[in-house]
Each structure stands twice: as structure tokens, then as C-alpha cells.
Picture 1 (spheres, rainbow, N blue to C red):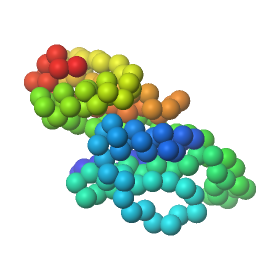
Picture 2: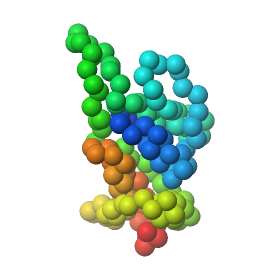
Picture 3: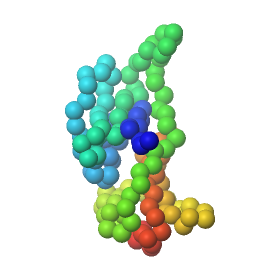
Picture 4: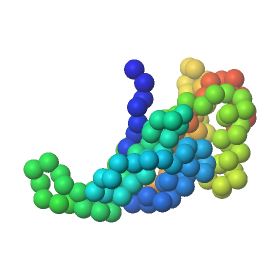
Length: 134
């Protein structure tokens, strides 16, 4: 089993798209013509992040139209230690994106958390070999 994609419902559609494109390094690509605005972002030819506009009306099962609330706890991406991890940290700094660094207890893996929007957190995790690169 592997992660297929994550859907983020956000009121800042363009800001989220810029983050995943410019900082994370995903590529914006084709997206089916859904009734709500959004973007699909690709890694290695696969759409892994689906961004959906939270400001438009949406049909809920058996309910009248309502505003969609932003939702997701976090999505995590595993980053290779060394050069790939350092490049991510450098892009975060270059784009002045604040983050929090933590260490996973017992494994010493490094976690880097970015608060993308209220209620939406993106985690990047790497093995201990990344060391003090952040």
C-alpha cells in the first residue's frame, strides 16, 4: 500500500498551490473539470496533492448547499536525508516560510512542520542521517 493522494480543502487556493509548486517542488498538472475550483500537483508523473477551494458552495450528501470548511490535520512527505533534505530547508528559507523542527522520540527521525493555513499542517520527515541539516 502507498499514499495515492491527499485532498486539501483551503480558502487560500492560490497560496497553497504556490507553496506546493515553488517550495515543495511539485508540478502543477491536468485536473478534471470539477464544479469547484482547484489544482492538482504532481510528483513523478502522479497527482499526489488535490487542492480544492473552500470558499464555494458544495453539495453535502442529503443536505442543502453549504460552505465547505477547510479540513485536514496534516499530510506527511518522506524526504531523503542529505541533499534532498537540505534543499527543502534552503527553499523554505528562501521563500521565508516559517517551520517548526522536531525529533521523533525513540527513532531520532527529524520532522519539519509547516502551518500552511489554519487547520492545515504539512509535515516533512527524514531519517537521522539528515542530522543537523535544518
